[in-house]
Image (cartoon, rainbow, N blue to C red; front, side, top):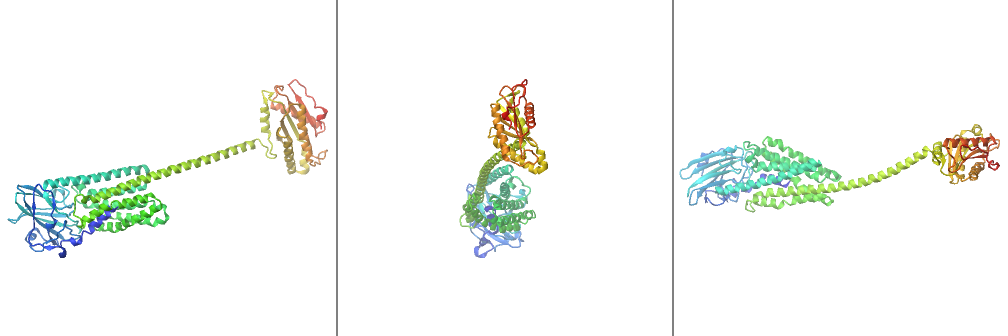
Length: 625
């Protein structure tokens, strides 16, 4: 994010005090200055020896400039800083071969981006123009006298030979970069050109690797922060390819206009991606107090995208101004936002703050060279690339850390969710089991009285018998309330229901845990209980009979004047009741019940059965109450 905004500042503030047309900063030049060269020597800066003539209208032709003896100035300094201007500028210098033999030399402008350049080579002895060629970044690549990224002129000079070189430079729309003009041997220039190309290609490859890696993460995660990073890296990569001449070297050699459009498009994408990345990476949407800040970044991203149609229309300076005036405030504001988020305990803020601070030394070096505080060096030229690469790597680390943190949070949330689900499943299982038990109970429970119903009675009878043989001695006591229809007719069915409930309650209590009570239907009940003999069966039955008598419920329709019950009891001896099934058991007890009614009601009749051949006998006299 620092790189593009600061570079825009560089282009806009190209050191106005160093401009050739400022008389206070440049001394008049009476005659052309000479620069001695040796074929085997390295390149050296010759900006202090250059003389400059400003042509405000751009109307001077080569012949007029060659005749012009006044108006030339010598700005000095290690680079020409002509500043933003729509003027045309003529540069001149005399190159002299001081070597012992002929040699190939190069005059290099020290800049890739010069829109219009005219090279003029003159023999000072005769005044004859030996070479004149118009070229520039906006011209076809074939027009360059030397097929390199940098604007350069090759010269072959014999020993002691000298040539005057005039260079006309003019910007398309007024934006001119500083030029660290150099001269030296051809071999030294070629070595340096290869080194620069290798470094810029390495930088582009590193950016491409980061871009592809985070693109893969975006495809895998669909995270918007990865999409923003990819947009930022793609814009920065496009800017680097176009701005430093790598694209024109290998990709669009025959489309020079792209050298001016694509840097602006790449810059617009990089800025938009940066201002999309910051709020997304910091998750400002999760912080209500920073919602306005989030919208400020979104507006800034959209404003930068305006530069794309401006770039296509070739409004270079206007697009640069928009990038500067929109990007710089956001650039200065972002560290404060990152620091605030970091203080709130969010690690992303710390990574973003460090990513902003780490490139600062490299950028300070670049600006110190730009403003002449430090001499320009070869590595200093790449401080922008070094700083931006450090920033991109740190942001990539931040994304990786954020992804790991979110993954850990997700795993913790998943574990918590799994535990919560397990608890809920356990609770639901318990509830379901309880509901199932309740349903089972309801299925075998009489709704009115709360005792077991006929279904449970049949199941329990079958459980006590195996192949018609009693598994243990037990008794079945069936009883119903005497003249109960009369009771309902006299007192009403609701009163009758209350009587049934009271009888069931007291009779169940009278069993004292020895068996179970069942309502078979209407006023008919049954009790199944353990009994080792008929006498024991009689004792339990008498307890049941006494519990009903103890209620002492008035019954006007019963000769006894109260609610009574008649009992029929079937006792089964263990292993002796062959071929006895639940229906037969019920029928025997029911027959005994009818006998109790026939004997006058309010009494019990006990029947003993050992096998089908046995005859039924009435219970002893004591069994009838």
